[in-house]
Image (cartoon, rainbow, N blue to C red; front, side):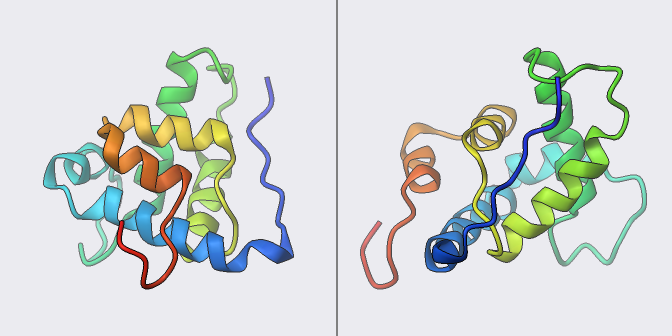
Length: 126
């Protein structure tokens, strides 16, 4: 099974940016969720930002466990790190499979999950 692919749609910059803000909040704001990826850090940074490689390792493990990726695919965490970086920066939107991985691997509640699937527009109450 191949790794999930991202389609970069030049029309999605606004929505991608909103989705990135929700994703950053999911991964950073809740200490319980933050600890999930912090346990996967191999090289410490300054601790002031989301560690993309650690998040990618969490997502890769979820994909392996869910049977969505072959455990023989040792490059999956690296490819996912690039995808996580682009998604967190708002350059691309996450595909459905990786959204599902984020929601499941980080035990996101239903109300927050809705925000990732349909990020609120600027100025609109969530």
